[in-house]
Image (cartoon, rainbow, N blue to C red; front, top):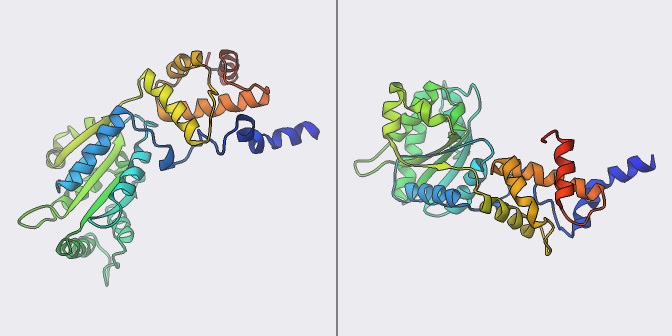
Length: 283
C-alpha cells in the first residue's frame, strides 16, 4: 500500500521535483506553449495574409503531430475581434454536407433555417450573414481543422462557400488544415475547381535538430524551469527518435521527466534516456 501511495502521488510531485509550475509536455492545445519554428512562422504569416488580402482559400498541411491544431488556435487568437470574425470547425469522419453547414452556422450563431432544413437553406442564411458582416467592414474566417476527413461532397461544399462574393471580392476566407496526404488527393481532376481557389498554402515540416532542442527548452521555460533539466547530449537522440515531430517530442519528454522522477534523478541524462527508451521498446 505504501508503494502504491507513493506512485499515486507521482503526478502531484512530478513538477515540484524539477521546480516546474506545470507540465511542460502535456498533450493539450495551449497557445502559451506554441513554439514557432521556421515553417510554423511561414504558415502563420501566409494564412494571416490570406485573410487580410481577402483570399478565398488557404491550406496548411503536414504530418500528424506537427502542430496543425495548435496553429489553428493561434490563428483564431490572432484574428481576434474587430476586423475579423474567426471560427474553428473540426471536421470529423462521415460529416455530412448538412452537418458541415450546420456547424459553421452554429459557430457563427446564425439561426437555423426556418421550416425544413436543407443545404440551400443554410447557404442562404450564411450568405445573408456574410453580406451583413461585409456591410459592417468585417470578414468571416472559417478555419477547418482535420479537413482531410471531409469526403468529396463536403469539399465541394467548401468550394460553394468560396463562391459567395460581391462584385469586388470574396465574402469570407476559408483556411483548411489537413494531413500531408491531402494535397495529393486534391490533384484528382474532380477537385480542379477547388484546387484553383487555393490562393496560399504552406507545408509544416518536422523540426530540424536545432529546433527540437529549442522547442524543448522553450516549453520547459514556459513551464517555469530556471535550470538546464536536459543534459546537452540527449538532444541528438531525442530528435532522432522523435523525427522532429512535436507530438512525439512531447510524448518522449513527458516520459523522460517521469522516468527521472521515479529514479530520483535531478536531470535527464543519457542513462535516463536509454532506460526510458528500453521501457518503451524504442531501442
